[in-house]
Amino acid sequence: MDSLFELTRLLNDADKKLFKQFLQQKNKRSDVKNLQLLDLIETDDIYGLNNLYESDKNNDAYYALRKRLQDNLLLFLSQKTFESSHSDTYDALRLVVVGRFLLENDVIKIAFKCLDKAERLAEHLEQFNLLNELLLLKLQYAHLPGAENLEALTARLLRNQADMQRDAKLNMAYAFLRQELQEIHLKGKIVNLTALMITTIRKYKISAQDLMTYKSIYQILFIANEYAAIQQNYGLIERYVNRTNLFIQSHTYKQSYLFYHISIMYFLANFHLRRKDFVKSASYLKEMMDLMLTDSRYYTLFYLRYQLLSALNLFYTDFADDAITLLKKSLYNTKHKSKPEDIEDLQICLTMFLALCNNRESLKQLTLLTRTDAWYEKKMGMLWTIRKNLMEILIQAQFSNIELAMSRISSFRRRYKKYLLKTSEERVLLFLSLVEKYLLKPDIAFDPAYKKTVLNMLSKAENNDIFTLSFIAWLIARWEKKTAYQVVLPFMQNNNHAQ
Image (cartoon, rainbow, N blue to C red; front, side, top):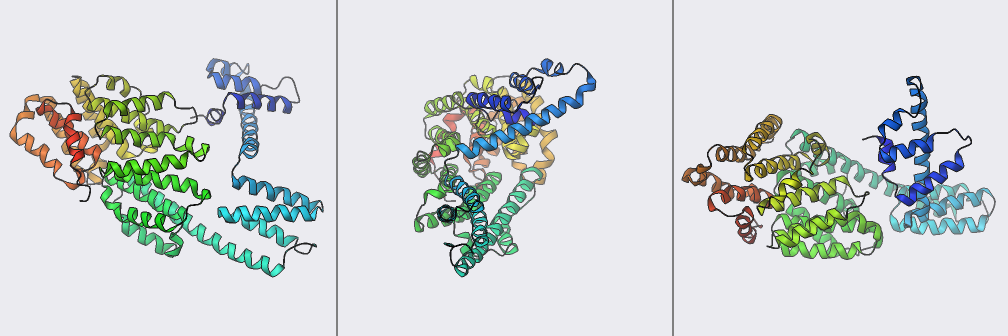
């Protein structure tokens, strides 16, 4: 996507009005075309863009104009973010900026008061980099009257630098683990999570105590949740969930950890959902919403993710109509600032719900999943994209678009067979072959050998995930003459999540 267009998407109508005023104030000449370019980008007017300059020789002028507009937009966004943010971190940063200005202008007493307040905020928020800058500033002016004791300042600076080192090691470990996840997602790399965690902790010399913070617990749980999703087996990460529960029970919650706490509630709700423990999942969702309501920023950030898990809980506890209504309402009310990944998650979930209920509207919803497979693989992951393609095959088959379904099967094998074999996911290819056999000869659904092969899939632990069971239910529904939803519901009530 065009970078300038991406930046303009971050502006609401009020912001656009303010930005135009900002440009008008900066424009020194009447012939500057930046406002004209902004209008053309907003309206996606390709012909207007081509006619912005009369000749091809003016390409350089056009790109220079784009560069200046982008620079001005970034400056505007940085000023707006700094001015409008009400977070304690920004308050501390403002106080440091003001404190430095006052010290440079010999307003010493008030300057140190500003820096003392900033230090309390930064310490509370564990903003070690900001604390380091602040303490160095205090040291720089430690010779002035009213300054703190030099030895006390030095001791705090050294202690904070040790905290910075610890935080840096955790961030490096987290970055390394995220990179490994990408290798699993996109290249099918085979990894044992526990062994990977231990190796990483040793590599970056991280102590057990270092792991006992909200941030590190969040990071560990994020990695574990992603790994379980890739493996489609949430039993693999139960030890990390248990460790998280022990941590939460033994630590006092602070408002400054709100992002991490909400994220942890989301991961726990998702874990129990995928293990078919819907009561526990719902209880964590309630805690998640209670926390979201304390801060409008995080309410907006997590809202669609909360709605997704809420809908899944409703759907798999026999409230399909409520789940479908919830998703439709959520999609209708999505704002332009919503993450595309969150919207795609809701869209595919709604499509799946409708298809399982044998609702032809699923065909229409399917057409709204318009991005390329390459985009989905990069943004949503290989598993998500594979599941989306399989769902498309089933929906086309379900509503008698047999030729299209067969064509999709051929395309799927060409694109994903090698990846699936590399990741030992032959079960997906087995499932696909069973679908193909049914499409070529629908009566095979009543063949005892065919039924046995399908039912054997239910007995395997790796197929106990709610989404995998939904796919298997589609095959069983062919001979039971029911909807796939009617078939899958009893599997949800048979709660063998402890396996």
